[in-house]
Image (cartoon, rainbow, N blue to C red):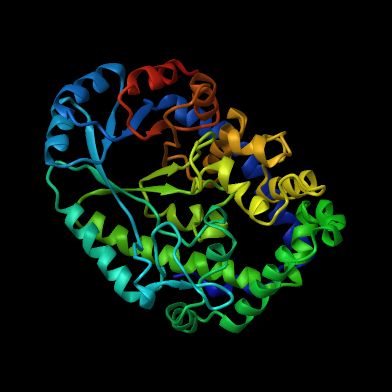
Length: 414
């Protein structure tokens, strides 16, 4: 459960000392992590093994794969027989659109389904989810389980799904944890008004808002937004911890398919909170995923909201994209400023940047294996960016019949 003492203030001298120390740690993090990664054997992961695991698994092992995720008992058996680890993957808060009792509510009070999910604070959904992990933890031959979807809605789900959860479930949970639900609603409503207001009128301030000090100043005037993000973090971390107890209690390792550092704080995922009990971190760094809405994909998470807000093709488009890129820290790695260009793909350097940020946030002993889209025309360059920025391994999503041709360039990465 999240510590509520974070509101304590620091004196000016203590603050400057802390900031300097943090800067030094971040600067040193990449080098130290990179040295650690170089000393380790790289591990290659792939999600899926096709319909003929008995034939495919040995071929995967021959190329250099170490881990296969997913599949039934026949896949587990084939993967292990080939000398690889078998992992499973589970979701979190799955709910149907008709399950109105367990859905999130947006800031206007309307039910929203995001990524096939309901409220992360629904007791019924949480218990149902934990039971699914109990079953996976009992599977023979499985080394570990990767957790996916344990979070709140992201920008790529759309504006209104993103501006959730104001359901009765979350109101009750906020009271239990000591969060100010009324303050959250007030300032998320203010954010909604700012985003849907006159773009031309607000665009003059966007360069300032894209700077760290500008963003901090705006947030100090809207403390309910910080409260909302902290609430999301506390709730997601609590459920992650419950899953960890199930998996570790059964002798299984725990991995997470987690948002990249650019977006994780928006959906309630904290690398710092999870590091003490998660074994493997797999940031989802999809740079060129082709299908919308592209949840967790950089090319879509950066552009869905600007597009929905009518900024694509508008006079304010470049300024809007500069703002979104500045707020996520990707303004240098992504040089394009047009929605359509970014939706096609972001550069491999963006993958490297997010890998470096993830490495800086994690202790050296935590395994970092970013997962990337399997069909990348610049696979060698993307893999170079992953391994050159401190990753211990590389994972691919999702299995395709031509998996070998698609992923082989990654095995020669520097």
